[in-house]
Image (cartoon, rainbow, N blue to C red):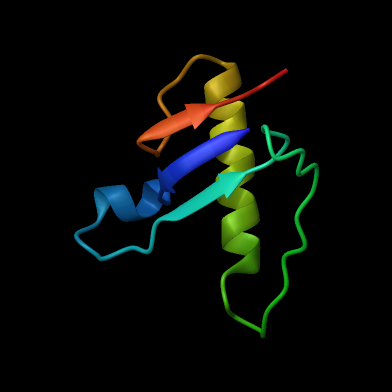
Length: 73
């Protein structure tokens, strides 16, 4: 899975700033997992929700909230 410049769909509808993120899992670098850690209220759950929702949206053929989103099977 490769996801570039992803953002929360909630922030798209609001006129707020956002911090995009890039995620690569299972691509040519053979990275099959990720260790996500940080202090409380740093956005770990928001990142996981964004990844999960974009995967579901891509699988049903809907537009994702990112500039590019590729799923490798």
